Image 1 (cartoon, helix red, strand yellow):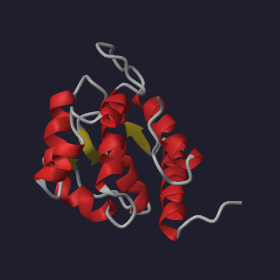
Image 2 (cartoon, helix red, strand yellow; image 1 turned 180 degrees about the horizontal axis):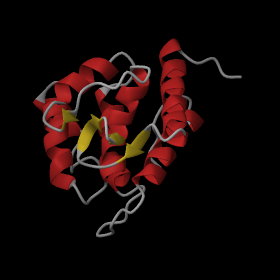
Image 3 (spheres, one colour; image 1 turned 180 degrees about the vertical axis):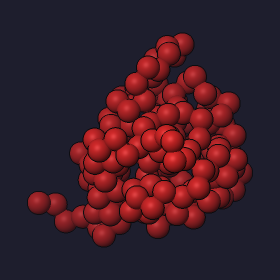
Length: 164
């Protein structure tokens, strides 16, 4: 067994909890909101929103829209750095919502410098955007993408790693 940092162990636990939430039909992966919940619907989450719900131990917060990234960062910053969240967001949203990703990352970034490092000029970020979603394709199963992202985090000892 590898010696993992406490933060890496927590990131793996959060990813495992997301998988349990998906399996238990407590959340459904969907693009457009970090978190969208209500009494009549299963909690809908994006990749980062799923991490928030798991980190809060299933205490579903009120809806968190894309323009409220600071709330998300405050919850996740003890576990995930900006780079990891940017890559997870890019992999979940893919190319279809490129402008949404751009706005989200800008609002999430601590500085313009952070933002500049993780948008179009960054090869790793571009590869993340194409990791699960082919350019021009329509996504019919965000749960599958979310599952693959969480399995990636677990497999890589708490880090989301972009493939070649």
